[in-house]
Length: 424
Image (cartoon, rainbow, N blue to C red):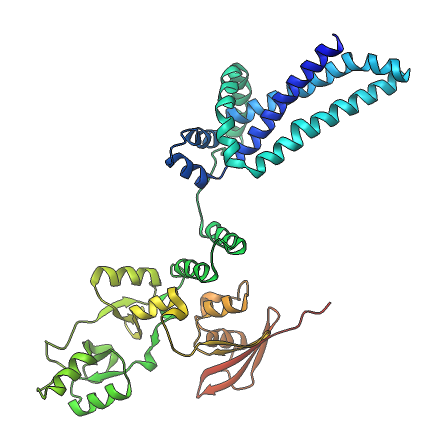
């Protein structure tokens, strides 16, 4: 074989190897979501890429067969056609063979492997749709070879019980990762990132994490006088107040809206807490529901207020639509004093009733021990101390120091959390 013929043959093998290497990376690494978008926009080649990703057996077989065949052919041609010319220059057969091997291997590694793969990684979906049709033609031409090798591989996979179906299901962790990458790249603003993160957080958090607890519920007995009701409504400017029999929260008969009640009082009309025109039925929900489920229940019933009941039928708190939306919108819907206040770069003042999810997010702690056993930072302290907490009690966990600085009877009202300085 002449040097010119060998050179042309090697260039053809180089081009074939570069094409297969680029197609392998681009088609395998193509992002399903982006390919689906391209398909909806009218690029039917994206459907071919998605189909090839779902059934990659034939594709992978062709890639390996072609790349191995090209490597063997290039070595054989290089050795037989180029070595004789090099031997005349160096006058040594062994040295000429080594130089021929190094030149051919280096050329194919750089031009047919490294560069095409890097190019495919930087423009994955674009290159994938451009190369998928030629790859389909190559698969058709190598059909007999594919049938043998792919069939043998399938038999072995079945024998060992290994699934080869590509799983592209999106998980919450995948979406979190995409959001974090988008925030770092500047595609998502900080507020947008927190908003989306909060929406997913609603599926994990139960109603008890944001409810108004039982001890803070303001309610009326059916026999409470109008003057006493008005006085309480002025002092406690809530929109809704529960009404109970026998001054017992386990005997709730409904709720009244302060606006409607006070409007009748101002019109000097006779008012009764049991008046059917004022008294509205309360919505009861179990304490195991997530915030997302409660939001769906509010939507389906048209309510914006619910009473939370535990497994023993005892009232543990109440929740409003505003409470749920405050988790999604954060500071945008509440003007109340923040439960977590950062004093310095390494210290925070935290209200004792702050939901543990908010604390974990604010402090950037990966996880807390046995977090299913408590819902607030106070519960975390009680769990870790293994006793009723008192002022000045401290614990250290995950490079943080948690110190109780204020209590009210048996309840923790405020903590100081300090992050230890990193030491080298």
